[in-house]
Amino acid sequence: MFEEFMDIPAHPLLVHAPVVFVPLLALLAIAYAFVPVIRPHTRWVLGALAVVTPISALFAKLSGDAFFDRLDEAGRITEGFYPTLEEHQALGNMTAFTTAILGLATLALVLFVVPRRSAAALEPGGGAQPLLLLGLRVLTVLAALASLYYVVRTGDTGAKAVWTGY
Image 1 (tube, rainbow, N blue to C red):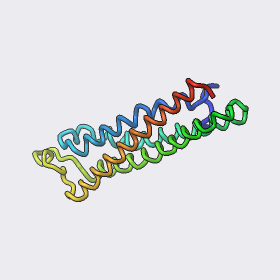
Image 2 (cartoon, helix red, strand yellow):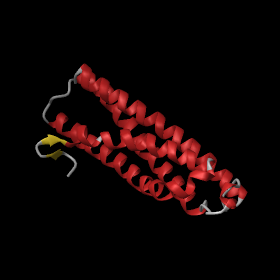
Image 3 (tube, rainbow, N blue to C red):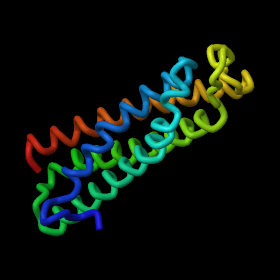
């Protein structure tokens, strides 16, 4: 399922979704956590991104595993190149993991930090308990930073793997 799309390896196509969605989710989730005035305008988009982004990261990871297996079975990977691809694979696993955490933290923000369409929306918290809001903010920022780090590192090692050869 994750090997090819119209006779083209799926991985080079699917990786573009998390490359776009992970930074978008990370930045929007942090903004939602700290800027109450944007909450009414971004709630549904953020909720959708919180679901779609981890799925896109998982699909990129699964297609990468299938692509690696395909190249390996065809004998197209040189012996000295395995460490590079294994590093890329490990970073892809971490990207999928941290993005899943970011997605869950973001969904919690969307569910528990409900925007109010009144002057109360401008107050810190926007209706959530202060301790819950603090915990969600910390978790969101940490997950967002980790997701950004891993998506950049994964993309960098993948690009270097493509351009230096396997």
